[in-house]
Length: 98
Image (cartoon, rainbow, N blue to C red; front, top):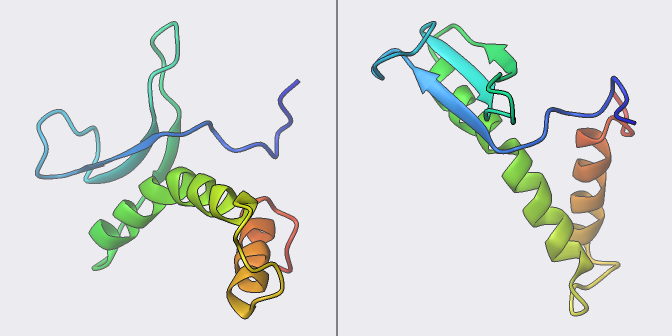
């Protein structure tokens, strides 16, 4: 069973005001599920909305890539980069320090 802390499954899509059919100036959407509905992830504003939107929409892919990289047999487990990667994964999963 999916808990309330589980993220909307990726991939996510960023729609901005230059795109036809965008429902609001800067929004992040979970892709359509079977049944046709999409989850609204975020509505963004401000001068950095476009850059923030692109980063947020890429979050599920970035998390999966980082987890895959750490699972690779040749990843140096004790390296500073691996420690930082594990901390970032924990933060993304809601297990890191706030």
